[in-house]
Amino acid sequence: MLYLHPGGTSIEPGVLVIEGTSDLNSGKGEKWADLIILNRHPEIIADFINVPTEVPAVISGERVEYWAKTFHPIKSEFVKTFDIQELHETDLEAVYHLRNAIAHAHVSLGRDYFLYRPARGERQEQRFIDALGLSPVDNQADPMMNWIR
Image (cartoon, rainbow, N blue to C red; front, side, top):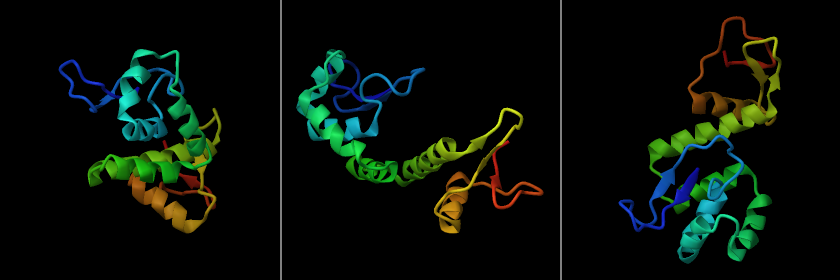
């Protein structure tokens, strides 16, 4: 789980804290949009963390704006908002491409790989390859990319 710590312990206020969780779609603050919203409204961080059964109205209202956006603009805003260093920005770009690959891949339990090709053509495919540092496999099928083993 990701959240901005309110302080009051050995952790300084506003520090980004990462906790393990088995369900990436539940809990408070796991979404990048929530972190951006909390950064804009630091006065609600303590309530957001301390009362997990209630979502502050300001968060609910602003989340709606993010639901209309795709992942890439949210990632870009996250990088800008938190002044992410280049090394971590590269990691976030890899996360972006992996998320798309997992969401749009052809998967079969009979194979130890999945088939994926970005829908927007060769330029997007090259970005995927570069972001993940991939090399083609021998006897690669075309037009599908056969990368993950």
